[in-house]
Image (cartoon, rainbow over all chains, first blue to last red):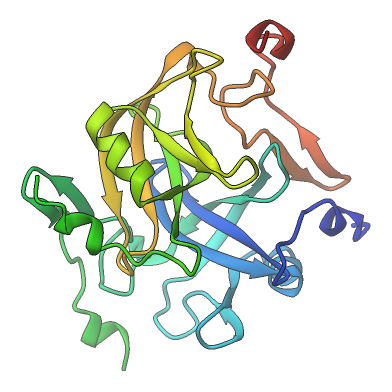
Length: 128
Length: 128
């Protein structure tokens, strides 16, 4: 593929673009992360989500440690060309490092934020 | 509600948090935007999405001009407490300023980004 498609994206001042990962089938929003040019190119090459870890300042092949990889079914770009949406197949149905299906497990209730999604796997058994 | 819930959010260096708007029912991801503290407080107060427009540097009650407001059904927060997910009912089923259902209408194909979602309403008739 002509690499021009990477130029269409309006990378921010740090060379990053926000990325939403959505589960194919259920349409659940699983997580939110960032990519740089290399991460997105690698994602397409590999067919699995590769993000840019802002805290560790390196490429992060999602699931490399946990096994919870994300097989990419589709890549979308928004109207302003500055946000990417991935439709993925989530290995183990666990996207969150807490062992939950989705990272968005806290819900605003009358008494504040409440965890409303079950832990499917003990994080200690996910990360050795 | 005790305003402590706003303190749980890890606002970025500009006092903002990224927000994903997802359609209740279909689970379609409609758009991505930003909120500051005031925008999120106002969203809860009003029951409709109020964002912070980074370009116009002001609060933006989504749909104030177009009528395409977003009634908020649920507010979620991610594991790192730095991303918000709204579940909304989208007025007119149109979230995008291009007149499309979702802002994520460009799909990466072998020959680059292709528009794959129909324009439901002419944007010239949306914005007078």
